[in-house]
Image 1 (cartoon, rainbow, N blue to C red):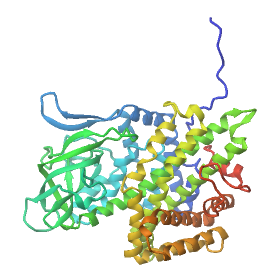
Image 2 (cartoon, rainbow, N blue to C red):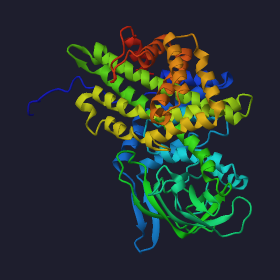
Image 3 (tube, rainbow, N blue to C red):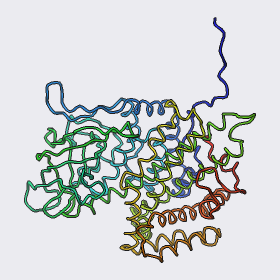
Image 4 (cartoon, rainbow, N blue to C red):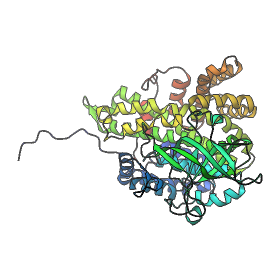
Length: 556
């Protein structure tokens, strides 16, 4: 035998075969904090089972395969008939089947439903985030459809089913489950959906909601085009209106849904995003009143925005887990990377950002449950969400890109090769800041809430005020937010800075009340106290770096 050139040593093993839920202290503690005590053990066991599945080598291989083999568009069959279908790798269907089976499209049927679903979404999205798009849109379609009881009665049982029933070979009435999508943006408008030009022409006269129309026009960015049904915006005689568009008509024939091409995206490659045309024969049913399309579909957008926050928290957590795992198994200059003071500062800083995102995401999910429950806190929690949700969507999704980049750097060159999960996380990291309104849209929405929904500010301040007096740096930061809110001149140009500070004091308030002291202290000292640099790894002296890193270590 030829002599061996070397022996492979000092390489980290893959992070597999662990419980993604139990290994995440911030997530596990947050769920226990918000869920009703009598359901705590049931929820913990349920999420731990999903966490073990998410941490398995098989699930991670599905995630790799789904992105290595992106979807392929087939506009016609071999005889020349239009079919407008997208073929996915079998791994995609495995991921979807597990997600739907775990209840990720149904936060409605059980107590603490949104909290349970959001926690599960945070766990399972760490396997592969692309399939989270149709999962998210499916659960989010239900609140919009409930504005039309007849449509809700027809579609809600399918959309909340735990059966993944893929294919366009039969109408919804013959299926055991359904997936939903959304079509809002057009070439000329983007976020300005009121500039949409797609036309809706009634097939029936004026009447109850659910009247039939035909659509003529296009959608510039329509993800998951193989979904069974879509909520889209189009211009009716009464103004911009929301419509339900099925891919398969009740008689089993195909609707006029022409897929022009699939987007070649930076990331999210497992998920098909398409350009679609409605050819004038496209059959649609009205959802809500004519002219109320934005208000109707915003019920869906609010739910998908929550998933943007939760999905970003999931990406951050996975990036931190990979970085901490690598540093714990890689030695340099005679000792493990995780014990090197500067690397420990980097890892602790990343872990702090991740925990703040997870804690905020769970608080928002709990607020959704309070609103859905309709109890005495429903009104105040709705007002809180009106301000806190776009603020969180702005800030948490923005933190993904620098965090993913820094976490990749922790692995050095090993993190820069495609066999590593880190390039995929980095490519995915900007996406949630784009979906459901970019950063500017979110910041302006916060200003709109301040101007039009004064109760939202009271609810927001009431939430952060629960930590008053617990940390002097938090108190000073809250005072600074008050000062900024009092100066409204030129506020639009300063909106990003205002929203950033508002979100940071909200995260600070939550961590001061609920996180271990070393977490709260480090957050307030760095994010609120000003003793922090522009890059990760600049936590101030006195931060308990070892405790922060150990808390983030993915071992369970």
